Length: 115
Image 1 (cartoon, rainbow, N blue to C red):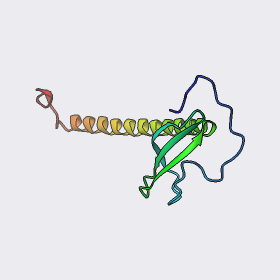
Image 2 (image 1 turned 90 degrees about the vertical axis):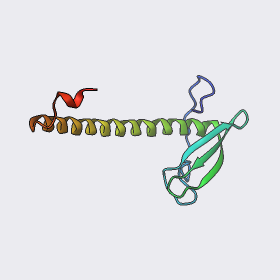
Image 3 (image 1 turned 90 degrees about the horizontal axis):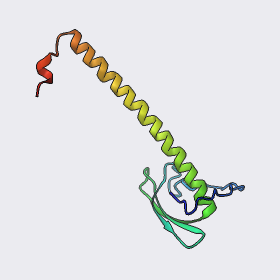
Image 4 (image 1 turned 180 degrees about the vertical axis):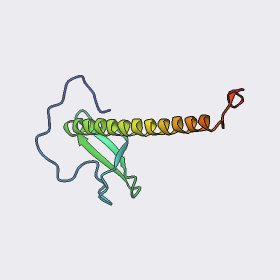
């Protein structure tokens, strides 16, 4: 998302007092960058939205912090993808069980699949 070169960024050694994706208005940890752009050679401009209180916040961050944010967003995206896969598998299992029950009760026949 924020990658400018193929070089791996150096890890950030210092800790921040408030996570970048924590809403400064309500304290929610669900704030998310909605738009971003380069702000010079070493910085990024972010437009961040909080889904809990609908606050919109602008921030300018350095390349090091942008690299940390990029890793965190990738982690969150993978977490969402895993949750989605689990929900889809659960839904498909329920659909298959419902179809099996309908077949057992003779509620479905070939005409149900005709066009």
